[in-house]
Length: 389
Picture 1: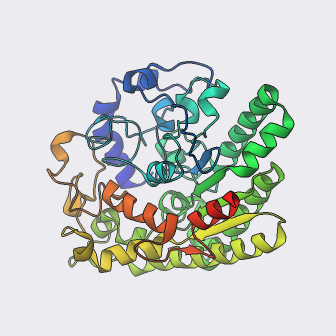
Picture 2 (picture 1 turned 45 degrees about the horizontal axis):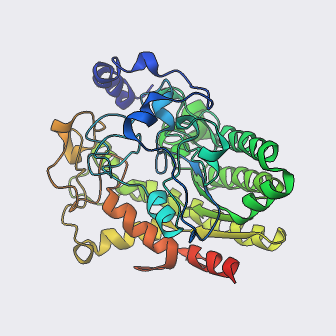
């Protein structure tokens, strides 16, 4: 166990002890009091919605509350997380406010997508989409396991399979197939395979595999999971690349960086993974009939924000709004007293995650490249418009 995990364990035990008793994995058929408390039950999508539903698979970059119901220290169910969200309450999102898929849901004319573990399990609750993402999850099953429970990529796809079976039983196979094939699937995963596996040298992996070979393994594993989704009639997929995690406050602190410059060794691995994933997407799109798969390079979009931060209105580029230690990168955000007053001028919210202001910009780029081109070979809006014709 790394030194940071041990310290995190000690500090966060005080905060989590009052809620950990209720952190068992809930059945999706239970009506959790958390959802009632925040009044976040899915509403009926407007008639102008561009797609039937949005389904989300991933990690903490898009987790909207899954880990609230798991025994893990990777939780964002306490303030100041969520302080700038619509309810001004923590929801489980690892941000001060909205995450990218929230902004994209609004673009698509859909309500915010509920967490798989945070809804009743009724088809009416899931008809406009489900978010299966789990903080700490990776492509590798055990990535992030030192933090506690999480739902890995393979397990999230199994949860989607269960959702699909419920749709088939409720509306029939043809209607369920049409709903799934016309819906958008958003996948954001892979960063924890570095943060909580490769960079921690779990199972001596750093010595056994060069970064390039490790990236090949991750990309080929993701390739297979996308094909598994295709076999379940998924046709419209957004795959996001890795962010420049070498610029995150945690690694600036860990590497003892004095001038705030990004850690090239870590960013180089993210660039390699993104290169391989984009190549994979191009090949999958050609191999799978009727598939509309795009790759959105979050690294490119994030570096554009970092390099042109003044144009975007950010003047704090290296220090997290909430945390402890140099760059606020030592410990995650644990209490409101640890947070800055104004997060809107910060790029980083905590030691790993951006503010919702950054999330909004990235979502704009995924939708139509509003600020800079991120997605290849097309934007999400192009997929939706093509479908509407």
